[in-house]
Length: 311
Image 1: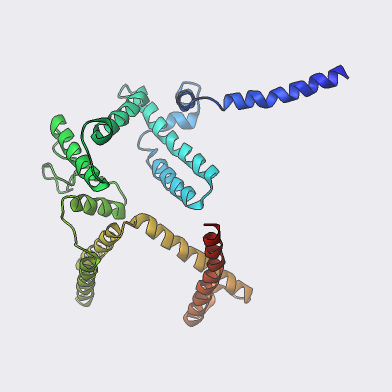
Image 2 (image 1 turned 45 degrees about the horizontal axis):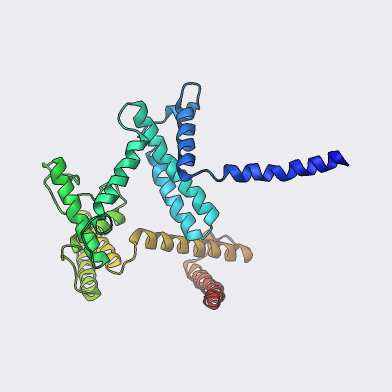
């Protein structure tokens, strides 16, 4: 009997040890993560980690960012937290490589963003006042411009034509961004100083104008002109998304996902009829597409009603 009681007592202690480990502060967990990555990069560490460079990790940085967005959209908090951790690892990984080369440390990375947030929010940490978010954004851009002047940086967004860079209100928009996000940020920066449409009517009119110019280029069978006009139309569409406060990259991702769902549904319907979708005539493909759309709408309606009731 005494032994059984002792075992029971020990069994109750085990969970407390586990709970205690979870009470580490964010800073302590971060230090542990930095130490893990340093160990992986050290002699006798992980061969794969030791082989990586800033260049080789570029793809992973982009992939992890998109996986964070996907997890966010899923509504699964466990997955969301996991993917944000993977993205954080990329920052730690790049910082470790830079540290080994004597360039900067992860502490400097954190210090830079900490100090920047203090500088860029004088209405919170200083004496400046901002009546609304629009004024906050205007102040933000002014502070950025002042920082560039103080550091002697006359521009960081190269026009890509080999000409010397000059200071511009568009500085800070990375050309490495996906085209939709680059266009979104360019038009957003321009709008902050008043270079913008008064309403959506002007944007739709511009899109109509660009559509006609694209049709004209197609009639002329001028491929380079067609590419240019299509780019103008896409840029106008991105501008519209910015005006409507919709992220074009996320909107397009959702459209891609919707197309994928419907296409897979068509393939399933074809298989259920004993055929392969690729072998169907075009007219029947259209019939299956309409059926997939209808099925999706019927599935979403109860979900929307349920969500409204919960609200």
